Length: 454
Image (tube, rainbow, N blue to C red; front, side, top):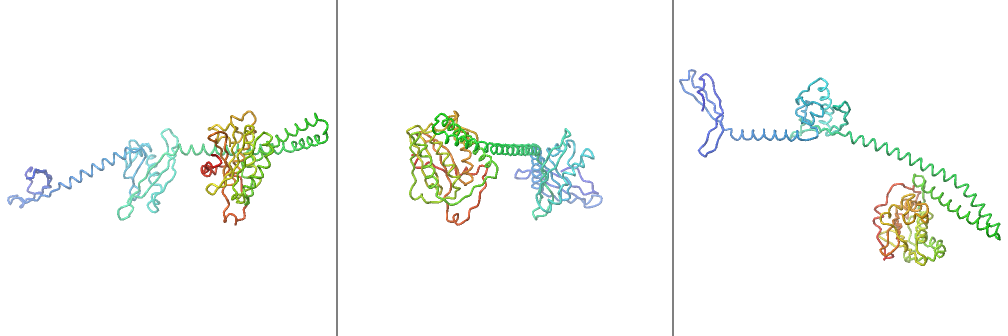
């Protein structure tokens, strides 16, 4: 077993023995003399520590693997005891604080020590008492700059719930904070530019309206006073026509200015969309007839009196604009089909022409201000404001207006909003601000082709 023990002392040694089953066992063997001079012999006993040693080696190996795993983590992590003393830190934590040569329980300089205590000591008592917490912390970088860091801590509990330490992690949020600051500055700049643009458009539009109205008044007066002078009457008529076009542009600019800022209001009242649709069709029937276009209107009898919450004038403006566009681009002798259907609780007006249609990649872009389809950039498409105004009006109604191409030919526009229910009719409607943000994507996607399109 080993050397003969000194008779004056008790000896303990670790031995490995091979038992009869062929297994190696580890024993702690203790031997003591029975007499002072050792003449009485020795007494001893052995304890089998094989399983304990196996468990100890497994625990050491597990601890080593955990240590390696923590060191492999790119995120700094550290552990303190209940008193706030550092117990363990991974490699990333040491490198972040510039302590590459420091041991977990010490640092290379007084400044390093102060930095370590500032990090591990921050909010430790609060975390132990109240639970997980996070703080922004600025840490020095190797180049002398500051690293914006989010320091997070969570309490470490025993099985009985007693707090025995705190686990802390750090995340570098420098780039995120910089991106937030850049985004905020860009947002403020965009808002200022938008406000300046809207104010400019509103001011210029108001300034233009007064002289235009005077020009129109004098043109109308001249035309009425020169009924027999055909050349003069023609000139006055052209002046009046051009003036009306300019006045329409000014009014569109005013609408865009009002809807781009939450100052425009609409008044929602229960009214049948079918009535508005009939009125607009009668209003534009002569315009259609002048181009050889037939308006084919289909409104089911059960929808004639069914109400929805609408601003009659604004809703008519949308229908009028869409229908006028359809008449403008419909080939001579072709029909423009208008219908009203009930689709999943929504009143949907469909307007289809048999014209050139809209390029697929422009179906959404044509609703942006000052954007026209490539097929109408010869000037026949107007200013590019009409459809943008229509979409703003429908959003203010909680509805939508979308465009599509018919499988056979032409474009199909759908104007939709919810029907009124009993609860809605019982309420007194108030004015609604014109929103500038998207709000009806879901409603638009719910609009499906109707029987009119088949």
